[in-house]
Amino acid sequence: MKRKRNAHPKRTSPRERSSQTTWIRPVCISCVIGVGVWLLILMIAAFAMTKIDSPQMLVTPVSILSVVLGAFFAGFACAKMIRERGFLWGLLCGGILCVVLLAANVIVYADGFGVIWLIKVACILLASTIGGMLGVNSRRKIRK
Image (cartoon, rainbow, N blue to C red; front, side, top):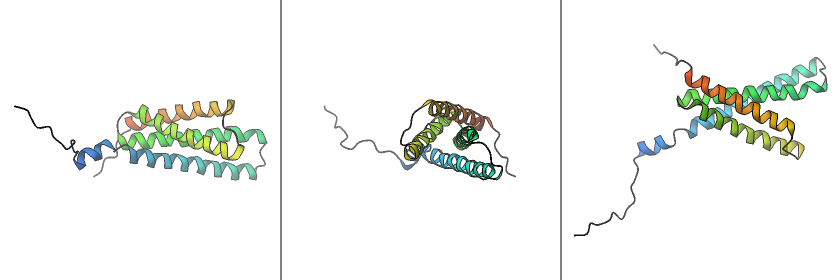
């Protein structure tokens, strides 16, 4: 006797669907946090550099420092929200911030790649990965 094949594909329950996409929201939120920290540090540094009349050679290190700190906080926030695989989530957030940085470079300078770009990418990925690992291993806030 032949068995009837199920004509309908297996349907997933809402709980299964939500567990499959639980990483999208934390990654988006943490990348927004990272870009926010990045821009906030850039604005503070730009204001400080105009007040003290700093030399032009400080612009590149300050921009690298600001994007690295933004990437660190993005990786930290993402791993803190997801609570697993901090290396992976930090690296993903760092990659997204690299794409944002590349888009900004293309818009402003009409070119994207160079030695400084490679240094920034390496620093961003390293900082976001470290942030992800620290975010996973940080203690949770105890609520009373």
